[in-house]
Image (cartoon, rainbow, N blue to C red):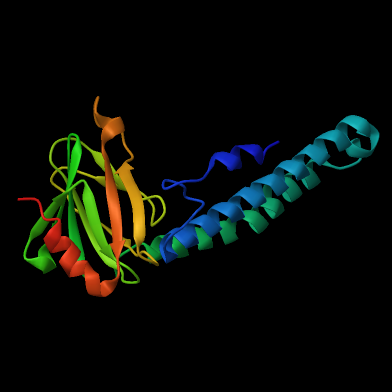
Length: 214
């Protein structure tokens, strides 16, 4: 029954269908956390029924043993691996080496994308990316806080007025994806989405030039 909601986790906004290495790492971490949580839930349920059905046996276990085993040893086995994995995934999303960049500017209720490496070309609610190549997205905002998110490529990152945040994206293959504002920014928030078109590397420059907004 707990797995039935996963049947609805599909489509262009599904984090369970990664289309790039960064999103793949996030999906793997998510599955690990889900499996770990199911294991812990099963363990705690078993302990609960053990105490209910065999109270005399449970009473023989000292409070010290419960505290050390359940409060120290068990978290010590579960939490450190998850923290390490989360740090590794987070580091992969950060820009550590120079790669081509695209500027994403949020404004109620649309996105403007600028391509400094291609003559400053601009597109509106349409983001072009080259396949198989990392790109740094420099994210800013005009009015209120927004959040940039392409679920199948990476995690979300805030767009803050007067500040620039940088998020690394990489798509594996050419195709079409979807992105959106992931933070409530006003009455038009639900419509603040954008299309992502991933092109073969040798077609990327021509696609940007062809779709440029005057």
